[in-house]
Amino acid sequence: MAEKILIASGKGGVGKSTVTSFFGREFAVRGSKVLLIDADPGLGALDIMLGVQDRVMNTWLDVVCENCEGENALVEVASGLFLLPSPSVYPDELTDEDFRNVVSYFDNKFDIIFIDASAGIDRNLEITAGAADRAVFVATADEVSVRCAAAAARESENYGIERKDMRLVINRFEKKAAIKSKLLNVDGVIDKSGVMLLGIIPEDKKIPFMSVTSVMPKKKSPFIKAVGRITGRINGEYIPLEI
Ligand SMILES: Nc1ncnc2c1ncn2[C@@H]1O[C@H](COP(=O)(O)OP(=O)(O)O)[C@@H](O)[C@H]1O
Ligand SMILES: [Mg+2]
Image 1: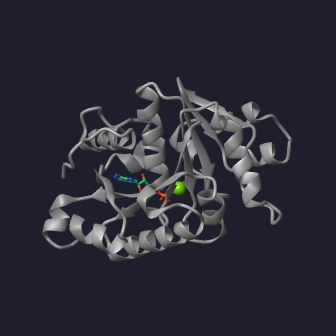
Image 2: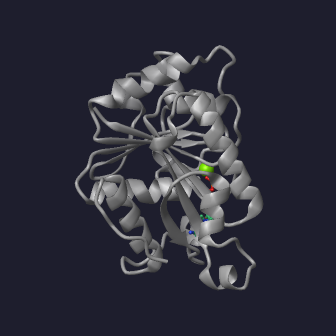
């Protein structure tokens, strides 16, 4: 059975899809068979971030509606890395069970499944959290984002994810800005979110341009190293925090 990890945040634009795509790449490079499920109706960006937008034929809603077989909705991104694209809208009659059934269909075909949620703490969080074993909340080091992550964590508890199975990723961190008190410091983010820290990913000025330039960050860049450390921790390795 695959480990099913929700990537959520409450607030939009904090880097959920970005970190999901890089977690996927990193796990696949390490030999896992990885499925990324885009669950951001209408605003799904993973296909573009992964450079496969021209190959999307079906979405997971087509699997729910039996318009296609599960395998025919998958897009192979790289060796061991697959994307299940998001529909543009969720029909009113879509149930939590429908989404859970799609995830279960792929359960024994993958080692790890990441579910990239939309922003907000509404129905979509209920649907996606209900299908996950654990959750990673992504926040940037500012008051609004951290409060939203805390709210998303509280809501996810209502949808069946236990606090012990929640972790926090601080994204777009800039040490200098934190030192100058322009950003919250790491302790502040952990305290205010109420979620245990999984890792810190630094700001990398090249990331926002990747979909146009197709230039990946270098393997030795602080960004990729941070993603690598987090991947190891998700795998249960003991890797001390580095800021
Ligand atoms: N560590 C980072 N450094 C620099 N830019 C980042 C980083 N993480 C994400 N971004 C940028 O932030 C923006 C929002 O990211 P995205 O993954 O779409 O957020 P979300 O899925 O939470 O809405 C994008 O322009 C993305 O390139
Ligand atoms: Mg997103």
